[in-house]
Image (cartoon, rainbow, N blue to C red):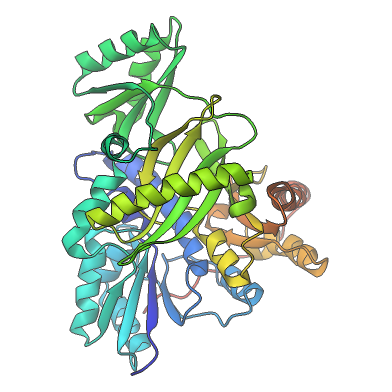
Length: 451
């Protein structure tokens, strides 16, 4: 037998658009696809085994080389299919040259493991393709026969079921509505009982799919404005619930779980940093929250993971909580996939540093108009920091091409405050560097195409 090999496919866009009941429209789909490329570059960190990465076209080869130099690992080969849909697994399956390159890179291996963001139809088609090449294929996620459970758990409605089954699971009080008449009535009713309510779609991406309404004259009017803007809120049923604020000092707690045939194998506490409704970063590791809270989160997560395992779920999933002022944990959603914490989790595994924390910042906003170049604008600053012994890792640089450039960074620390401080200090240096003076302009270096 030859050494098994991982085929790493960050099918983020396919996952976020996989529900046929939600009509996103071309404009929203385009935004989801561009953001998926930004998150997809995190896949460079997911596996430490021998591997091939399938990355969307346009990855930066200088960044890619730096990532693996910092990891002290040889840079694995990359396949980048011709972008047609902007969905990397779908584009791979439609690109004969990219498939031929992938097949050549797998030559000499008997077994391949598909490492993905989450379960989508394209994953099973790709697995079938690899089997057709004579490979034994293993999935690090849900087998095809149990695909339904990934869809089911990813819906926020599953939390209502699990709250009836798992003793420690609580959900915020509220109502389930199926049309606009019920929606208006439920909002008006709950706003007579609570200062704020939240309307939530069963699905959402990056903060879209929910709106918080105040107990004031603008309440219902704000609802219809949000429905007009957000296609997720135009798909019923919807949840209308009391808005429960996070207790100060802990952040937005969550746990990432890895589930295999034997049950829950790994639980990692995290605490998300949220700007209004959008996640900006996450502290990862047992020291990311107070020890007592890590124990409670782990216990609830293990019980939820056992329920998911019994339904057939396999792979990584993330459970998001709200910790209320009275100490109650409410489960707000389950993401039946890898989360944005996965790069940091992979770093902790590499170091074997379970008592450390890694802070991963998804969107360091560099205060200037784009596009920026990793090689010319960002790398010189990072090089100075690396030379000074600063452990800062660029997890994704594709967002430098956005009109408002963003960069993803992560850093380790002995506690949450130290890890976050390293990232924030680096962000200030980067912002100061790119915001002043004339920058040398060279074409942004992209990775080679699969052909």
